[in-house]
Structure formats: structure tokens, C-alpha cells
Image (tube, rainbow, N blue to C red; front, side, top):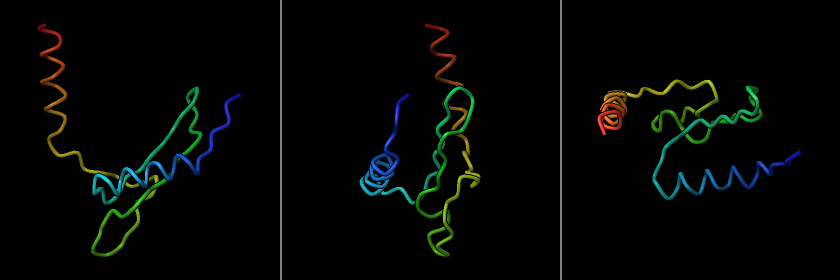
Length: 77
């Protein structure tokens, strides 16, 4: 059985957020179909200081178009 030090993981996430100027993210880790970790980091609204939670819904705008285009290019190749 692998024991994970979540404190080290959380520090890594926070350091990455600081380095990349990320306001907030939500992270979930699953193993064998079961969620073993979930946590929100930072803010979903910087002005009102509303925190990100594991249940925060993020808008993805038009990013799916990029994934679709890449998938088509890979299939074409």
C-alpha cells in the first residue's frame, strides 16, 4: 500500500499556483474508481475572496474546440 503525504502534494500545488499566477483550482485524485483526495485551492472570485471548493464548477469556454481539432489531426496523421 502506498502512503501519500498530502501536505507535500498541497505545497507543490500551492507553489505551482504561485509560480503560474493561478487564482484557484480544484483537485481530485481517484484510485480504483474511488475518490481518495479532493480539495479546492485559492479563490474562485478574487474580488469577493470566495474560495474554490471541490464542488466549484469552472467554465471551460471554447477549449473543447482545441481538443477536438487536435484529435482530428492525430486521426488524420
